[in-house]
Length: 299
Length: 326
Image (cartoon, rainbow over all chains, first blue to last red):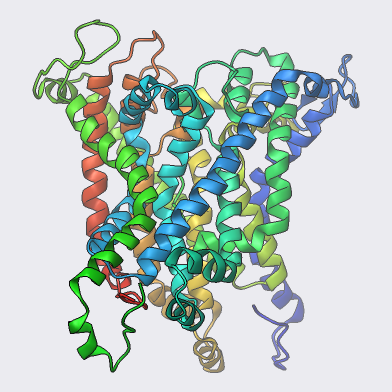
């Protein structure tokens, strides 16, 4: 923000540049724990053992580059777990995107009985975080599990059930963001299409949705990352590795592991972190936008 | 469907719009809404009611009683007379206020101010680094922190300490559990406020700063007299929003300490509810009792969110739609 000023002040030059360095220094200090944490993950992944941040080999000397921590990638289980993780993430992208763009359109463009009520309600839901409902959702999922056919895919202890819960809990945010995107689109094109006799659904699909592609993309990225990282809900509603996702798998792995295989834990950690990082690097600007656009507060 | 265009001049026509068209439009709108409504009903409403009903029963995996035995307010009585109730309550306040004060609002504000006083590209980089904990899977993030606090020769903090020749190198998590609970949550939480404050600072007209500079104000004076007063609303917003978030969030504590070390040292209200009902060491689930703990938080959450939506006049967002019955 501050561009090099050209004021011909008599102030001592070195003192001024020192003062200018203070914010950089403080910021660098503040991000140190984050940087060190990531550095450890990367170093540990490729080394036999670590002492602090130093990689060491079996004899305790510095060095010991190894790929042995990565042997898990030849295990079929990790890929099934990764597939589950991907399923939840994609389920969230499609589910939240579809449902909330439908509802957002209706809320933005139509006047109907109950509109205000629903909007007020989603606002409260948006502010209110649903963690505490998990106890009851557990019983809802048990009930769904008892329904023939549907229960097999969306009941307790299924990837579908986890995805469905995650989609629902993300809806208040999605609906609000979508409504905001629709509100910003001029409605001339849409109106002429309606006068020409196009149905509302066709207008929504063929005219409006293409216009909010950036918004949809931002929401999709956000949901992909949320779905990919999901821990609490899969942890609560699944049992065993058949249906677990990467964070849950990693948690189990790190809990019943001895000290020695911490490096393997780091490797699995990096494995689950990589897709998110790649996504993040390419889309940070969009993400910053959505976070400031009213995302949830996190812990 | 198209019968009337609602424009400025069409006010008279609107009155004549047949009842049938309105019903049809409402049905059409609700069909757009139906998937969302269905999911909200199944996963918000029914659970909220269910939680209340559950809290009045003694449903648990240990007693094998016929499910849903009504026991009135017994669970609530048990909750308030729990031996650890005062401690859990204290912990909850400690957790919320320390994290909020030092990180989610305090550090967030400092970061926003610092990054808006430096080169644009550098500030972008720092903000990205600060966002990392938020997008890291919580389990991986906790693995990092566990590694920080480990005993020698593995622990990173102790590794740095030994560089400075410090002798005492304990397992830091049991040494100062609260410090790390707050740090772990704070490093995730600070970025939310940072982003809100940064965009608020960027929205302040530049001439205000220029004018102040011309008048010879120092950076500190500018921050104190111009920036901070204009950040009043964002500050209030982040504070209330994050209070609510922290009150019900427990994921990082669950992963880091599980409420330990020892008895209930870092156990907060939300974690108690969750553990009682869903995750116990002995595999006994006291759903009814846990639901009582949870339901109190739900009530607090709903009341607080209604209040703060009032404060921030969110009802203004509920304006009339652009295209009416058409």
